[in-house]
View 1 (cartoon, each protein chain N blue to C red):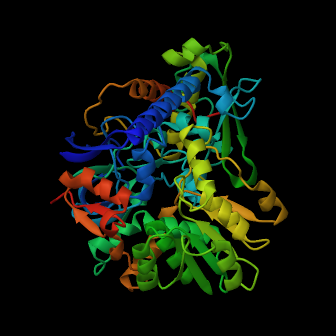
View 2 (view 1 turned 135 degrees about the horizontal axis):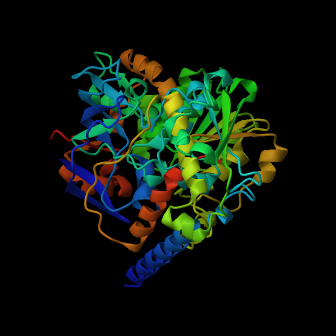
Length: 161
Length: 391
């Protein structure tokens, strides 16, 4: 009985800790990251892609970036050590990126991250990799599952600093 | 189709799930022949990697036959017998071109999760949580394989399904550890953990010319497998003082290379184990790094330590002073299997790498929950439970 109670307490503590950490990560990811890396002061977001700078025509950007139209500034430069080309973009009018915006997935800065990632895939692979619909079983609703679903909705809008 | 799924912490189920379809032009669909459990699945099962959702299909080590081919696939045809590397690599980004395939920029559609954890997103892996892409796993009749020209490898005739299966993950992970730790002819190599990955790391070190290879574990049956099938020496850490034995074996120097193939749920006979358990259960550390600590202390001055076991987050009492003052090189990696699998399959075809002994329990998908239970409890000498979706 003591063991059972201990196991229940342990599971409860673990589940609680997991939920708290996931909430913290969604609401405020900064503490989980190295200081100051969430947004650069300049607002530029950059990806490195294969190829030479001359292969990227800033007047004919990949569709995900072209869709931003005049809202976007774009820079292209060679990456050091033959690592390819650095493709940088920033919004001319940059919002603050509030917690609410992050949670609802309506953060323009996050949209730009996603666009840069998709542009990189188009340049490097020729298409954007899709994961859904992925086969899965019954999604029994749980608080942890709900938070993870929320997190995975915004997770594709990262991977670009 | 039927699939083995994660239902919750320590709860594995068998469910009907939709069949996968081709979504990108470089995809193939593989009809799974064999799909293995892996020690790293136990971290998902136990909730140590909290990025699983109820209903997620498990499994990342598999082989089978190509059932459908996307229009951009050039290397594979329907009917080919293939083994598929666990990680999804595009083959085009800088990391793939450098041979660091598990770091692929384009293989993980959810980079935000690992970016929050580790500062950068890494590649994707089948059946290994939404942090590594949310890719459906291989414990099912069919699985979708993106970037198939890079990730699927035709199995040579004469290599059995049971042998080729472990060219998907255990063997290339072992090869990654030994190669990235720069094992050289004449080295003494110690490997912590005699599971599938540890055994393959030991074999890789021998193939790369190590003079002496010692594998450390506490389960007799696994140590016996090491002696019989791998040809390495063994130490039972419940019977001997491992650092002392290693010093004696190496003329007081310590091993040149120490490969840790245990991961975040390490055991130890001493009080350190209780300390790590309490801290992990209270979430004051995410991982139990017992074997890593021992590897660092045991390694010779100026040697190389490689963390091949899976870790998720932060650890306590990490001997950074030993790393610095002993001038150690500390490295780690998930597997960069794409670069090693052709060589491994060749060695398998020449009988120089044997793996079928790892599949101690082959069963149907319906037995998924029981297979995972036996694997977790190491019941009946279970080294790996392997599922045969075709029955």
